[in-house]
Image (tube, rainbow, N blue to C red; front, side):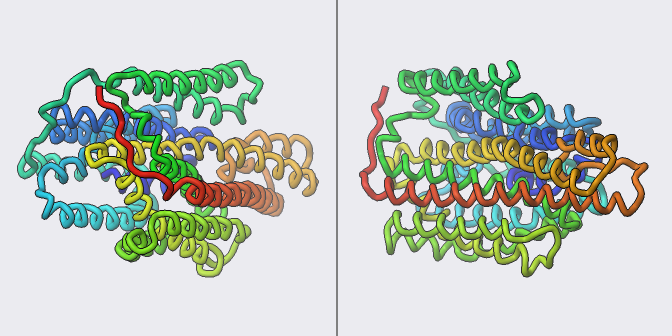
Amino acid sequence: MAFIDGTVVNVALPFLQTSLNATAIGIQWVVEAYSLFLSALLLVGGSLGDRYGRRWIFNIGVVVFAIASMACGFAANIEQLIAARAVQGIGGALLVPGSLALITSSFSEKERGKAIGTWSGFSAMTTAIGPVLGGWLVEHVSWRAVFFLNVPLAVAVLVISVWRVPESREEDQTGQLDWLGAALATLALGAIVYGLIESPRLGFANPVVLATLIGGVVCLVVFVWHEARAKNPMVPLGLFRSTDFAGANLLTLLLYAALGGMMFFFALNLVQVQGYSATAAGAALLPFIVIMFTLSRWSGGLFDRFGPRLPLVVGPTIAAAGLALFAVPSVSGNYWTSFFPAVVVLGFGMAITVAPLTTTVMDSVREEQAGTASGINNAVSRTAGLLAIAVFGVMILYAFSHKLGVHLNEIGLDEQLKQAVYEERVKLAGLRVPEVVDSATRGRIEQTVAESFVFGFRLVMLTSAALALASALASWLLIGRSRPVQTRKH
C-alpha cells in the first residue's frame, strides 16, 4: 500500500489537476499534505507500536490509510483531496514503521535476513508495478481508481495480520512519548512548506507568508532545543555526535531532496509537455527501478570491499550526472534518446548509494540504537522530498512565469488575450488556452507554454544535480571519520 501510493500519485497528478481544475500550488499540496504528516509523525508511529503493540498500531494505520484513500477517491474538489491526503499521511506514519518492526520481532536472527530480503523483494516489485498499473487505471478508468486500489489491499492486509502476525511490544517501555516534539516538528515543517508554496501566489512580502516562514523557523529552533533537553526525545541529538551518522543523514537530506523534486516534476513534464499517456509516464522510470533492484546485492558488497566513503562519493556523483541529463531534452523527442539515458545513469548512481548508505547509518550507532537511527534516516529522506517540492515549486513557477511573459510578448498576442493566458500561469503546463482562440494561435500559445515549462524544469534538474554533488561532498568530508557513539540514558 505505502510503496504503491508513493509512486502512483505522481502519475495521477496531471489528470487530477485537469479534473479538479487545480493550480500547480494545489497539486503540490496533494503530495505535501501526505508527506508532511508522514515525515513529522513517523518516529512517533514507531514508538507507539513499541509501546502499545506493533500489530495493533500497524492495523490502526492500515484502517486510517484505507478510509483516507476512499475519501481521496470521492473528493469533489482539490481542498477535500488535500485534507484526505493529510489523514492518509497520519495512517502512513502508523503503518510504515510497523512493517519492518513486525518482521524483526517475529523472526529469529538466523531467519531475519531472508524475511527482510523477501520484504525488500515485494517492496521493489510493487514499486515497479505501481506506476504502470496506476497509469493504466488513470488512462482507462479514472485517477480516482488509484486511491480506491488501496481499499482491497487494506482488507487483505488486515485479514493476514489478524490471522498470521503475532503481537509484539517492548515490555520495558517507560516515560512519556515525545508528543511536544512531534507537534513542534509538524508545526515547523507545515509552516515552512506553507510559506514556500504560497509565496508565488501571495509574494514573499505578504504578511501571512512572512509570518509562517518565520514561525516555522522559530518552531524548528524550539524543536531542537526541546529535543536536547527532553527525557525521552523523538530525535536523540546525541546520535549526531557520530560524524558518520551526521554525514549519512546530510547526504540523505541533499540527495533525496534532489530525487524527490525530480520525481514530482518529471511526471508533469511527461504528460503535460511531452504528450505521454498515463501508462507510458508510469513506465518511464521502470529502468531506474530495475537497476536498483538488480544491483542492490552487488552494491551491498561495495561497503565491505571499499568502506563507506568511496561508494557514498561515487554513487551521488553519478546520480548528479543523471539528474543533469534530465535537463537536456527539449519539448519533443524519442524516449530512448531523450530520457532513457538519464533514467539509467540516475538508477546506477542510486544503486551504488542506497545499500552502503543504509549500512553506514546502522553501523554508526550502537546495536540498541539501530531502530531509532533507521527511523531518523527514514524521516530525513521523506522530509527532504517534502521541502524539495516546496522549494522547487517556487523556483519553477517563477522561471515559468518569466519565460512565459517573454514568449507571449514575442508572438504578438493582443493585450487582453496575453493577460488572460498569463493569469493562468499558476497552473504551469496545465494552463488552459481560452476557447475563443483560433487553431494557429492556440498552437503557438501551447508551444510557448511547453517551452516555458521545460525552461523551469531544466533549472530544477540542474539544481537537483548540484544538490547531489553537495551530498557527495558531504560524504567525503564527514563519513569514515568516527566510531559509533552511545547516547546518554535517562
